[in-house]
Image: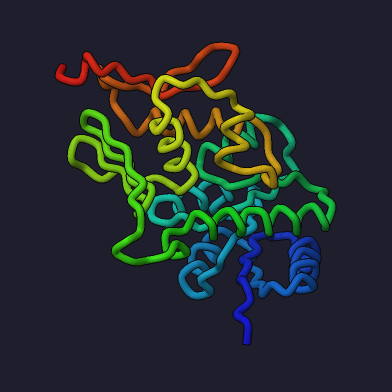
Length: 242
């Protein structure tokens, strides 16, 4: 028997939640519905979903706070649902760690497509989905005080482990593996999120911002904005001893 992917639907509007569930069940997903933030956090432990559809406006704990709690110790894929269409609301959701953002009302086919796209990306990113063995090539880059290992999805900075979601790590690794090379936002979207990603270039800006917040300024390397073009991992070998 094939194990179905489990989707946790968090929405206090029962009609919308049931409709979402119906569309997903037709696509052979298993679904579970809760109507508030506290129940959502509990359901993560008991239901163990593969992905969460999370409404922002919830009674008690709102969707933003739920996402904050999730990102403290989990990379569970989360798609935010909201009637809000302002750029600020979308960017805030992405900054907090959402994988995608859907504005209500939405087309059912688009919603299902986004769910499938996020699940594909997450499964491809998961270290457990990679082949194992002693002969597995190690994908790793090192700079003064910094080590980024794409093989086991780990980052060490000044001897300490730095936790980050898979996409942040992949973006960081990609830039660091091409030091001093400038990439446009569109190129980074294509390399890291691939052609099936339904998003925009602000996603890159949000991830760069989150990466910068995790590291103090280093004299030998830095994530640099090239105005009007994009970003680069700037490395100065002659400063590595500083």
